[in-house]
Length: 148
Image (tube, rainbow, N blue to C red; front, side):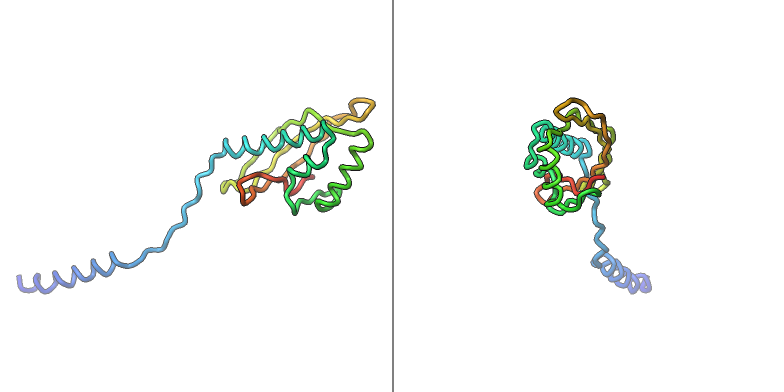
């Protein structure tokens, strides 16, 4: 019994020591509402569709991040100039559709595979496909950061 009384305080101290130690904090992954993020991206995509039909380069550019890159034109200023020129020639697009959308597990990046029907003043010129890369901005909005 005497041994038990001597060991009991040691067991108590050991328990207290381990229970007071800080464990490693485990970062919780954010819970992403994929359906809500997809809806937000589709809404911005619809704005790009409206911009194409209206030949509104500034509305189109409002859907682009400041650091957007396009494989054929470069950065945002080059993109603005290219589309201004393209619209001025009577070109526009309509009937944009998202064929595939994939959102990252963290909900901050996404890509879409899209297609558009291109027109000029003479009528339809055919359908094209694009891959658009999207990034969620600090304010929670989605902007295009690259397209190919």
